Amino acid sequence: MKSWFRNVLVIFTVTLFILPAAAALAKDLPKERLVPPIGLLGTTSDYSPQRYNMMRMIVASWKKLGINAYIDPTKYEAMIKRAFRSKRFDAYIINWSPKLVRLEPNVFLRSMLTSENAGWDGINVSGYQNIAYDKLADAQKVALDTRDRKDIVDFIQEFLYERQPHHAFMHQKNFRAYNQKNFKDVILAPGTGPWSFWTDWSATPTGSQRVFRQSGVADFKTLNPIMTQLITDQWLMAHIYDTLMRIGPDAKPQLWAATGYKWLDAKTLDVTVRTDMKFHDGKPVTVEDIAFSFEYGRKSGYLLSFLDNLESTEILGKGKLRFKLKEPDAGFLFTVLCQVPILPKHIWGEIENPATFANSNPIGSGPFKFAYHRRDEELSLKAYKEHFAPPKNDGFLFVVYGNQEAIVGAMERGEVDSCGSASLDPLQAERLAKNKDIKVVAPLTFGMYMLEYNTRIPPWNDVHFRRAVSYAVPVEAMIKRVWNGHGVPAGAILSPENKFWHNSKLPPWPYDMEKAKQELIKAGYEWDDQGRLYYPAPENDRRWIDTIDQYKTYETHPIDWRNP
Image (cartoon, rainbow, N blue to C red; front, side, top):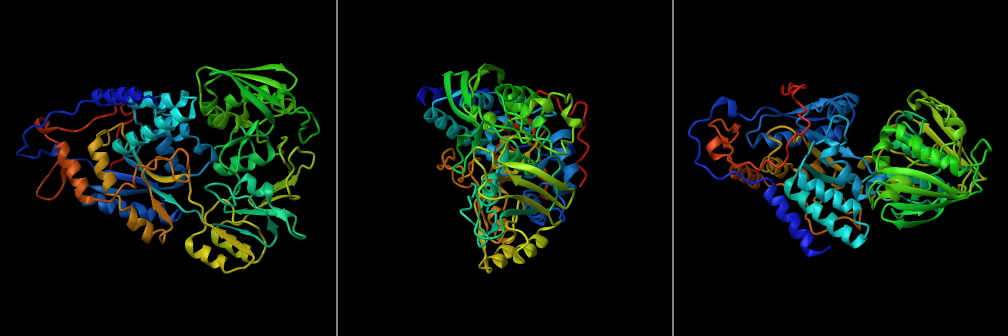
């Protein structure tokens, strides 16, 4: 990227929000300046004891700064609604799971952080709204030259590292296991190991056990590919439904139902597709089905944000399509062509509202064909041998066990071949590793544990306050005590496992209580004789306010949750 571009961005960023001038210290500390109680929203201890224990350690550390911090454990569904819908939280601890699509930098850097996605239904959980950042995020999206884009993506990671609109603090090692006696040549996916489409597709039988048996603690929420939100449901749909491209084991888009593509210009893409494909009911897959799928995909809440930039899908002839974009999108192959399922128009064309359609007998064209589903017990897929890339085995069976300990026991008894979506804890991993038939792996996730700060409201709209509480996260102690050492501290928002896009120049963010206090002093915060933290006096206010809530979120939804 040209040096002038970086210089312009730096100048724009610095001048957009000017730091207040220094002023004299206040002599008294009025009650209205007391920093209000700060809640850390997260899961209950029964849902995730590890996350709950990290919440306790973080809150204890924040209290040392004079913050009236408290843990706010909430049942999972209610927690998700508060974070993603009502925005009733101060800080929120989240585990961003390693969906393969999140290897594309546009997901973490643009979709989850720009102003346009900070509203009620947006996935910008922190509500960060900064014009300079929006311009950066847009710039990386339209940079079609990979080297230029890499430079911008690196700069964005530096920007976020400095401003801390949210705080990525740990990349977890995911312990998973599979049966190496029953199956060979098992492909391990980046970030998830033996839990991926590629695992289930590649597992090659060594003997009489010819169906690869995955396991899970809970059943799938839906069999409807348009309504999937959870990573587990999307994993299942990838077996039944084809896409034009797939994210390969090397974390790069690869041709799948498409046989080739060519960019005519920055906003026009021609794609050639296979002409010999059939749906599981025997009807041929046509370009009309594919074009229909991209239009119908707009009915999906999950896919809508990715398809918003797609202006049109045009049929050029047998086996050829043209995609026209509203603006250039460097991640289009990754986030759109690898995600939109190819639907049979003769079925879905009759479904006006997909939200009301159970799709209890899903018909796709993928390598696996639906066989049966017994709710909360098991789901069976058969290998679709007529597929252009049939599985190496005879099928896939998903068995529900209710909890991870039951799955470990089932693996020891040889009842299942993989531990599925839920990670093993270190003791369970050590236990299974003693079994010669079982292979245990621990890939570093490209997701992360993160603190989402609600930057729509004070004190979270202040860079200095955010940096202070980030310095006060005892990450090394949490990794040691909660995770038995199986994790690494985070620095850049993009994981080291995302090797090409990760900014390796940024070190892990440190735990440093002295730096935390200095950040608060720098901004003019004060403490009373009881050690309680107060906002700066007007004449000494040096806070760095770098985000403004243009949605005015709390004018009609009051801040009423601060009750430790």
